[in-house]
Image (cartoon, rainbow, N blue to C red; front, side, top):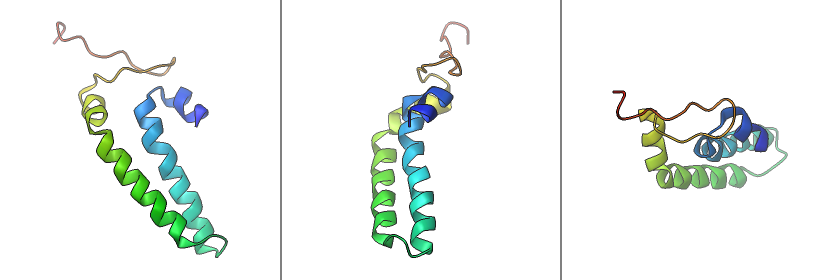
Length: 82
């Protein structure tokens, strides 16, 4: 998850993205019969809760005002420059 965090530069995107990666991995494993589908359903519930909790951050991302960390993150837009 640190690679995703420093690659993207936004903690909220990392928080939303890591469970999606886990859903894909566990979905493939469940499809192959290696893990139960319960894990996939649990991860879906976790992702829904995270998306609900991160609604303010999603709004900031869409508006371009989310504060980022790393060399890839964009600086938030100044209200004065608009």
